[in-house]
Image 1 (tube, rainbow, N blue to C red):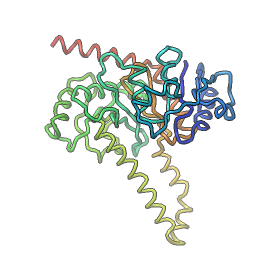
Image 2: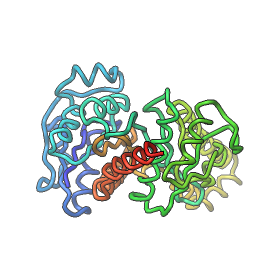
Image 3: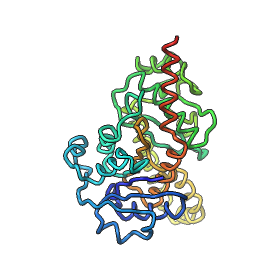
Image 4: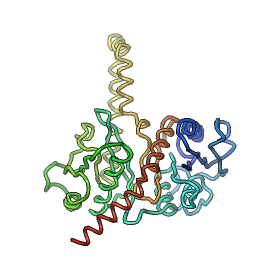
Length: 334
């Protein structure tokens, strides 16, 4: 199995990316990695050269670049060359912690879409109180969704949850302003009917307040609502930890209490740690493309690589294509 990685993407690149890649090839059998980026910056952190090769380039797509223009104009950028490795068949999948919009553009224009999928979905796995987590899609790849897109998201998310996360008959919910069947916008009402007839375990409408309680294993929504929900969860978690810290450092009494529960607080923080779940998949593309968090450390990169390996091993993209094809044929018969 071969994976191409944009070594220059992310806040801690290339060090975190290279170190995460080295951990991966030391712990995952039959894995080969191609790092794409500035060789001079990569080599000081490279501890395994048997299973890791480097494609040298100094050109990088930054967070300030306009995504589509950057992908089209920066032909030798690390992210573009990474996607080309997949397109040309020299890699089975790719990972970047860089510019999200540029990665989506590179995925669409270079890697291409799965037959039968209209729009890809950006799909992170988020934590729940019980530690199992849930998949949320879409969180920004497609802000102007149609009912058919949400149907496809439900199918793709269900397959990923079963094949990669090991959840049997995963529960798929539709984000709405209430749990009643007839609630919501025109988009949600139409999507609800389509999801009811889909080859998935659709459990109906779910509310955002129930996300962390594990109300569903997969939650489907349009990219605009999904991004708002994602940022709200992230912001609330960060805000709560800041408030807890303020309380626990406000007096000698609370400082003593903080010392007693320090390990428990770290355990709580671990439950909300994005790095435990790998990256966000760009589902719907012809090959696995993973967006690692911009602030990924080596642990997060390693988990993103493990996640990507599972996508390849379980042939998730092939299963998605076959499922969508069979479902479309059944719909035509009816």
